[in-house]
Structure formats: structure tokens, C-alpha cells
Length: 126
Image: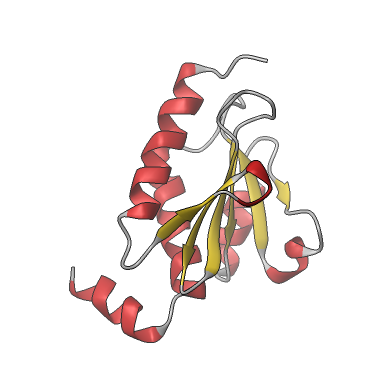
């Protein structure tokens, strides 16, 4: 399976944005890329090797953002019971997939749902 260029560009932009957030780190559990803050995942970035469709999984507490994300082409509640806690998987290669800027907004919301208050305060001063 090949990765469409626009999906890869979006993925790279979202990854770069996520890792620029205060104290964000990158890890590779299960062969998948994740961004963590305070040892907790705030965005699952999946794989970029073409072995699985590219997508991002974010935690959205805001009802409007959650509904908007779920309305994206091919989007679905995250697996392993995470969907019940507000996690949404959004594919990047679908026709009409969200733009990178909107995905970054969702990543920031997910970060804010997971990060300690002091890091959210630091983000707010940026």
C-alpha cells in the first residue's frame, strides 16, 4: 500500500506540531508513533510506512469538536474501548479529510485534555 503524498504531508505537519507542545515526547510502542506528555499519550499517530492507512487518533472532550471529527470521512471512535472516553480516529488519506490546521487544533485540544495544568498554562502564554 502506498501512502498518498498529501496524507504524508498532513501527518508530518501534525507530528511536528504535537512534538512542539510543552514537554511533548515521541515514543514508538507497538511499532506505532505516539506523542506523550507527562508519560501519557495525547495523540496516536499510527504508522507512516504504508502498512496501515494513515490517520491520527485524538481525545476530544468538546462535544462540537468531537462531533466534527466523527463527521470526517472514514472517522470512527477509537478501538480498544478508547472511543467511549472521547478518542476519535481520523483517517488522513480519505477524500475530504480534514486539513492539517484543523487536525492540529484537535491535537492541541487532546493535549489540553491530558497535560498537567502547569503545561497548559505554559501553552497559554505562548
